[in-house]
Image (cartoon, rainbow over all chains, first blue to last red; front, top):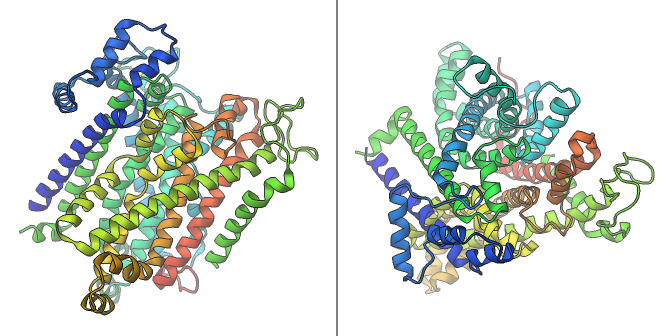
Length: 326
Length: 274
C-alpha cells in the first residue's frame, strides 16, 4: 500500500506541475497573447472576446501570485475559460464533445496493439533462430516510421485507390447520431483506418520491448528448471517465462501512452477525425490559447490516470511490490 | 552486422545532407511550369503541384531534418547529463528534486506539450523549434544516466579521487562522465530519432518554420495540396521513407551496441526452440 500511496503522491505532484506549467507558459513566453490576437485581427476583434481571453488567462493588473490563485480557483470549479474559436462556447464544452472520440479510438487501438505486440514479442523470443527473426528488421523500420506518414499511406492505398474505407470524419453524413446499430456501424467503419494506423505505428515498440525482456527471462534458472521438468513448451512459454517478462513491460506500456496520445493527435489530423487532437490543432491555428491550454491539461491528466492504473495493475500482478512496501 | 548496415544508412544520409545541395545546386523552392509530373529523366522523383523538384527538396530537406534532430539531441543530452549525473552523484535532497522533475517530464505527453509550446512561439525558426523539442525530450536519458551514475560512484577510482581531495563537480564531469560515454551515446542516438520525428510532426501540422524545406514541411504541403487524392505518391512517399530509414539506421546502431553489452539479444547462431 505504501508503494501505491507514494505513486499517488507523485501523480498528484505531476498533475500540479502540469497545471502550473499551463499557467506559466503564456507568461514566460515573449509577447502578450492577447495583444498578439488583437494585432492579428488588426483591431477587428470583438471586445467581448478580448475580455473573455483576459479573464481566461487571468491576465490582469493583480500580482502574479493573485493571478495564480485565481487560476487555481477557476480550475477547481472546472472552469477552463471560453474558447475564442467557438466563442462563446466554454472550453470544457468543446472538450467534452471531442474527448469521447479520442478515448474510444486510442483506447481500442492501444489495447489491440498491446495484445498483438506482446504476443508477437513473446513468440519471437521463443522461436529465436527461425523465420520469425525476419520480423525484426520490419519492426525496427516501423518503430522509426512517423505515425502520420503511415496514415497518409493507408489513406492513399485503402481510401483513395481501393476505396474500401472512408478517409475522413467519424461517421457518415447520411446517418443520424444516436444509439442505433446503423450509427455504431458507421462509427466503427470510419474508425477502422485511423485505428490500424495507431496499431501499426505503436505495435513495433511493444514487439521489440517484449522480445528483449523475454529473451533475458528465458535464460533464468526457473525457466530452465521448468523445461527440465518436461512441462509442455506452451506452458513454459506462457506460464513461466512470459508471465514474468510482461511485468516490466506494463510500466513501459504506461509510459508509452504519452506517445500514443501524441501520435493520435497527428492521426486525427490526417483523417479529420473530430477528436481532441483536431481540436488542439484548431486551437493553435486560431491562437485560441484557452482552448489549447485546456486540451493540454485534459490530455496530461488522462495520461496520468492511465499511468496510475498501470501501477495498480503492477501491484496486483507482482507480489514483490506488495512485500517491499511493508 | 547491424552496426554496419545502420552506419551505412547514416553515412549515406549524412553525405546527402552535407554534399547533396552542392551537387544539385538548384533552389529547392524554385517553382516550374511542369507541376505534378511523375518520376522521369528530368525529375527523378517527379514534381510537386507548383513544379518544384521533389528530389531537390529531399536533398535540401535532409539538412533541416537532420540538423534539427542533431541540435535538439545535443541540447537534450546536455540537460540529461547534467541532471542525471548531478542527481545520481550527490543523492539526498538534490537527487530527490531532480528525480521528481525527471519523472514529471517523463510522464507528461511530449507531442501535445511541444504543440502547445510551439503555439506560443512568436517566431518558429529552426533553432527555437529545436529548443522546444529538446525541452520535452531529455527526461529518459536523465533517468538512465542517474541509474548508471549510482553504480559508478561506488567504484574504487571515484573513492580514490574523492580521497585525494578532488572537487565534487570535477569528479562528476571528469571522472564519472567519461565512463558513461557509451550510455550517453546510446541515449543520444535515441534522442536524435525522437527529435527528427517530432520536427516532422510539428512541420506536418504547419507549426514549424514552413519557409524552409524540411521533410516534414514537404509532407505538410503534400497533404494540403491534395497529393493523396490526385494520386501523387512520389510527393509524399520519399520524405516519410527518408525519416523512417534514418530512424532505422540509428536504431540498428543502437541495437548493435546493446547486443555487444547483452549477447543474449543476438539473433544469429541460436538453435530454435520447438
